[in-house]
Length: 411
Length: 87
Image 1 (cartoon, rainbow over the protein chains, first blue to last red):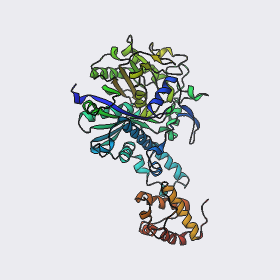
Image 2: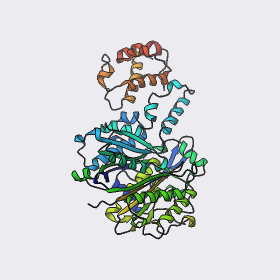
Image 3: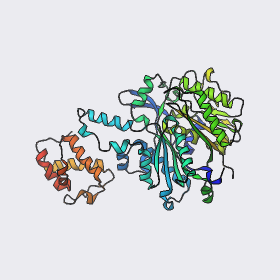
Image 4: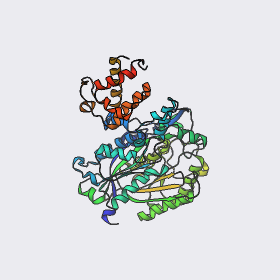
């Protein structure tokens, strides 16, 4: 691969239900600390959710928080954190050469539901419908708020990719950097999904919303006692650059994106498809010029739904059976952060390049034999000694699959 | 509502839509926009808040009356003189 086509991650900003910095997030993943809590949502009453608790006012004025959206605030916080972490001399960066590419599962549901609730107090008089509704609900909202906050004048867009969106944001960034559309990409995924009842109610109607007397034990991928998804909010955003640019400025390099793929099941609105998932994984490895034997950690997508866990289990057995790759899962700690899920799940694993540890999947007390994976890192982290390659799965409704492979950078 | 009560209603709205501003020294004779960061969307917030709280419809051709605190109170007084302060 030409040097200019090699893409690296140089700065990380995140907020997750169990951490607002990479260090805090990583430590809680290694310590087995969940971020799932009891949560109240309009109309439904108590549910469980992964709730973020970052300082919105660190990078925004109160007026900006009020005018914008939760997704926007998450994106602004994570983007500033990533830029600060990157060591970029931001004041002197050519902002017209910066692109913002954020994966989202959906956008606008929160704001629309809030407005409908508001006008319900006025007998549905649409004259009190907010003039802020449109700028809050346009699909590019979160990425656009980042450009406003950071003064970015290059391209920005969100990538709507259901729950495959976190990876999709990084993939878009890599492609735009290779096309020379930008020199620095601010990329990843965000979600504000917990701030309206709809996603909870829809999963409940589908029989796929997790319940548990202990919130920290509610999200149980691959476990027989699982009973569904825990919805979470969050954001994972990175600065992404071409390798020569990163080397020229002496940047810290978290990892190199060596392979990626996206494909479609073309089989069902909601049910996943192990065959297509396996094809997507193999395509990403093929593009990276590696085989399954080169992967050390597979960050699974599993959401703790029966069909989802079994299908991904089948895909992973087909691709990684007999290899050294260990499999873990981040949702068991924080729930399903939707558009942010793929990004957070990758970022929580990146420190493995330095510490050699694979964090676990927690709440695995009674493994489901139908998705038994011999190399599942169950409940306790595992010391692998050395980690060179992480493969990150992210799949979503309408049969969208995304796979990202990140390698420890070696000059 | 008295003129003073209307002034307080408007001040409360301004504090909500511009929460970063210190309005303690607001000059009633000077345009809002010359004393605080207030763009067209914020201005529409004032109109919307009054609509929600007091069901007042302010037509666009009357927006110029909301230029300063003094002109705003003067414009709203006949509309609100028989209306109690919202709870």
